Length: 443
Ligand SMILES: CC(C)(COP(=O)(O)OP(=O)(O)OC[C@H]1O[C@@H](n2cnc3c(N)ncnc32)[C@H](O)[C@@H]1OP(=O)(O)O)[C@@H](O)C(=O)NCCC(=O)NCCS
Image (tube, rainbow, N blue to C red):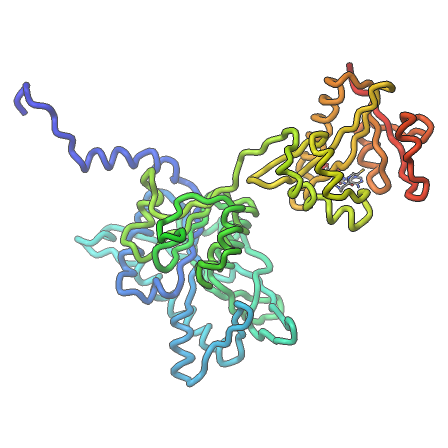
């Protein structure tokens, strides 16, 4: 290069260097990938396997949950039979189960064979990949629902995480067929997305990836949706424009995300290299579903009324809380504090101040049942105590029928109805017989 010439960036070097942060980020991570039988049957499957082998070589701990639907259907066709589907679930009779076993075995052998390649001058040159498959999944029958006996169709009961970790620790790729076994020796037909979701949750996997048919999750104009949060996915699913199969994958993805898998990707298996692009480039090539980490505790606004009503309704039905109409809630909404997560109100509490007595009532304390026992109640209480204090209150009181112990364990003491502010005393409902607890709020 002459000294006065600008250096021309080498695209290979730029690309390789740009991918290095991702290589570091994925090394040692556990990734569960759901691969449908359609991908295995595709003539381009070898390329996908090469990409999987590359991920393995880069230190990713891979668990592959394999499907076998077209292979099962092909075998059924040859026997003049068909898989029955009811309510989005398969019905597996004896003939179908025989086909499932054969097809799952054939798919497994196919994947093992491709992962065993090591021919010179191929992407697998020098690769020595160990593959482990086994009885990792305990299942139970779906049973009879609405009068339909689903036969040998099962659902995941338990994942043997210890055995899977052993396989991964030994440097192997783990294969999970779409089969589950029961302690009584039965075999059940499972769906690959279900198995993948359950395995990812049980293993506390860093990622779950579903290789889907077509372009992936797209909006009404056919554009790929690159990022989604579970609540947005719920809305997409409710709109029902996704198609059955993609819907099934997305439902599973949402469940896994809510079950603690931090990142769930839906990637087209038909776009060459989409898996690598998704993992090693900034923009990715599929849809990434992440649990919204952002959680905010704030004063409620009028548009929170719906969310608060939804949160309180089941507790009002059980008589844990006194019923409040929408109108009352609308006029009192600014007394409420809400905890919002992923666009959803997951907890709330209200404060009613009695300035004269410098006492405040803590009411409507509620945490959504999916989010209990994680300290939200404690945090909310601490927040409400601070708010009461800021408003010049000396004491906080609460009327409760079923949660006395919870308040007692947090410094509230049982007191008499007579110690309530006059205005509140007059409204006290003797029939409901709530206990009154009070707690001083620190100055
Ligand atoms: C009470 C409530 C607000 C606690 O919320 P939370 O976020 O689960 O609370 P935390 O995570 O801070 O605390 C969990 C602890 O409280 C305990 N707890 C929950 N409900 C309880 C109750 N009714 N009585 C006694 N203890 C209770 C749990 O067992 C857990 O204790 P542990 O870890 O020792 O087992 C929540 O359970 C709720 O919304 N309940 C229904 C509504 C209600 O009763 N509101 C009060 C109306 S006056």
